[in-house]
Length: 209
Image (cartoon, rainbow, N blue to C red; front, side, top):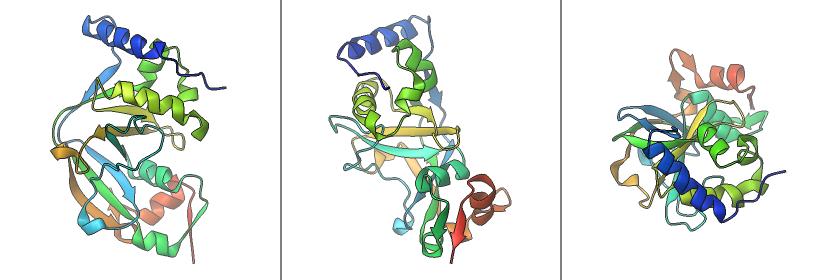
C-alpha cells in the first residue's frame, strides 16, 4: 500500500536539501551538457523531439502545473518500453509513424536520484513507482522537488533502467535540451541494431501485420 504524502514531507525535503548542502548526504546529481537521451514519440513532429507538455497528467507532473515534464530514457529500448508499456504486439502503422528522438542536454542539469532521496523521505521507492493510484503522491512530491532541481532520475518500471523527468515552464524547454535527431522507428538504428531488433530482443514486442 502506498504511503500518503503529507504536508510534513515538504518540510522534510527542505531538511534533506540542507543536509546535502552540509555535505552529510547526497540525493542529487548533475547531468553534464552533451549527454544524449532517447524519447519515443508518436510521429515526426517536424523533426522536433523537445516538448514539455502543459496538459501532462502523469507520474511526475507537478500537482500545481507550474512546470511541465518531459520524459527521456538512457537507452532506445527503455524509451520503447516506456512508450509501448505492456504491449506484446504493435501495429505496423505504429512502427512506421512512431519516431525515436535523440535528445541532448545543453547545460548541466541538477536532478534528484529517486533511489537516494526516497529513504530520507521515508517513502519506499516501490511505492513511488507503483501504478496510477500513486500519482497524487508523486505529483505533490514533484512539485516540491521542482523547487530544488531541474528534474528527477528514476528507474523504469518496465526495464529497471534509468529514465529522467525534466521540468520546465516553457514548452520548448527554454534551451535546456536540443533535438539531435528524429527518425521513424522503421528506419532507426542504434549501435548497429535496428529498431525491429531492439523491440523483439530487448522489449519482447512483435510487429503485427
